[in-house]
Length: 630
Image: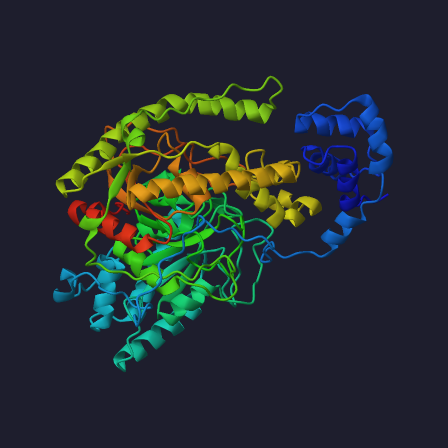
């Protein structure tokens, strides 16, 4: 007998359970058990999960009301709702009374206000081997293409050759879009020769995380079972980069359905340490950019997927304000947290890419009518600059929680692995503090008067369940059909288990999480009333990556130095690409690998946040480092 959810919830309401966790949990238990009738035992199990008491007499009264049919769920599932269909509820990070600043009248907002001065490379002879330009910035290469010293076709062929050379080492490519790229490059050279110059990205080869749809090519989402998926559209960011004259040369790896760096072809590697994963889930974009195999890339972030790989691979990542870049044509994990952004070799490169991709497209309803305009000459000295004092001064401890008495064998193995790795990771965190403190010294020498601020206190670890709950809905069909077994590394720590578990998460508590986000957004607004930009460690006790993803604030992640040969070793497992073979590395760190620093900005204040991060790069030059690939 089928079960109608509305009747069920109404029944619970009539007997006093409308505001508890019980209805959602009990209905999930019944659905998961594929039961024809709700039983008293199911009510007991649901009550235990929900943490509420139910008297025996109440159970007896409920049963006669609960055992109706399940046609409501069956009818919903029969709709076969695509991943691209959003819910009717739209998240907005702006607190009451605030709106994005209006654009200046008459401004051509699709062009930068000011670029940095012409780079020195423009006055030098072009090397015979274009591989010597592989690590040049987009600003530098754009100038060479604009002045016709280098052709787009030659650059494109060089970068495609590098992709193919290093893919067997780094596992960062899913599809090389060669036919499309060569046609675009030839067209770019033709237009530039005719005086039709589209701007600083014209003719530059780039790569996109393979959650972006591109006509004529598979869009795999990095996941087993989706290897041949074709989506007959170009994502909005792809269309906009096409319009800017950029040349798409590859669809790059992401962890399966945007988790981690493991995909159906293996594990993407860190070019600085190829026994280590590149972090996730923008694994391929960060690795390929770091290895000099694309000029820039597009990644995405929901809970750290630009921040982590940019840090690990020593590149510059830019996570725009939520709602600044349309996500049309991109895989959905979390409607209220997903963000697209560039991964590049410099902050200015990120700003130039952002210049091409920001703004509403009429389809992504969460995208606000804000504006972005890069100004390399912006007077950043007029900004009020804060810093998260505790992140710089307090040791970052990550105690290993106790193991449950009924833990599975797999959980025990993972627990023992974490215990074994923790001393090395603690030593690595302590080693890295000297880079964080050195950054403060640099800022002070720049004349920055740092204002100490704190992240407001809220249960962020609970609130981050937003994206796993929304992900369970976005990939509901995988769980219901059992196709989640096709995902690479479908273990208890990955999406299949999370999606199954979140089906038991009560709707009431999900709404409470969103109400808590409202409080956090208002509290963060008060912090940004005091300062314009916040400097912070990328990882630290504040958990700012989680916090700012929940509140929608922008972040710019920049390289901040290179660990020496004396850095603590981190555990690594022998390199392999066999499914189920395990991780290539544990945690960040290790000798001769990069560290990073993060700049946080107010909502839709992305350009001024980039301006300060750009100024920092000009006096440090850490962004000019690149891995010693053979």
